[in-house]
Length: 167
Image (cartoon, rainbow, N blue to C red; front, side):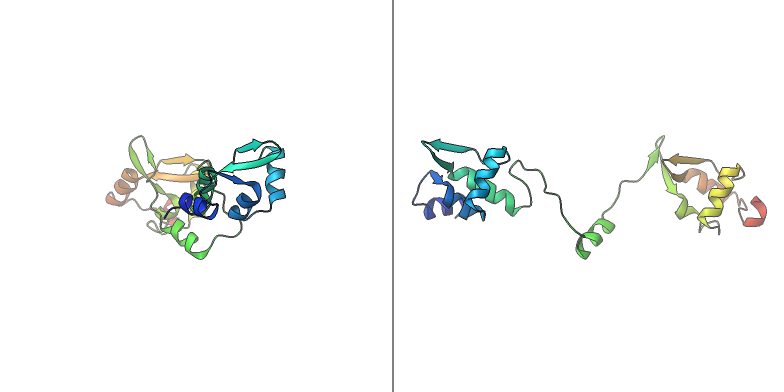
């Protein structure tokens, strides 16, 4: 039995549901819905018969279903408030990210290259800013990257990038 059938069963099979009953289905006070209607923020379209306000049972069911999947009635994800849960943090950390590519070549971050050459990332950044670093760099915003092919050729050629040789 889906949400629409449950709403129609509880409202006696009616297609139109009165404001008070719609508010109870949605877990809101009737005055809250009236305020939302007045301000144009209500996500349900009302049907007015005389001075009474009704809502279509189908619209209420769609709204309840949208709330159940953490989206608004338009299908947009609702923003998550507060501090993320540990599960959400771990999910974001384990999410595979698309590799960075420049000119069709994969990029390697400075923080990944620094341990390979036995240097601290900050000392490599200092050498780059002084123009003493022999491997070409790619800057994206504040971050420094190297082309993977350039790093591989530096390792294969036995380029000595220890602190004493670059300074």
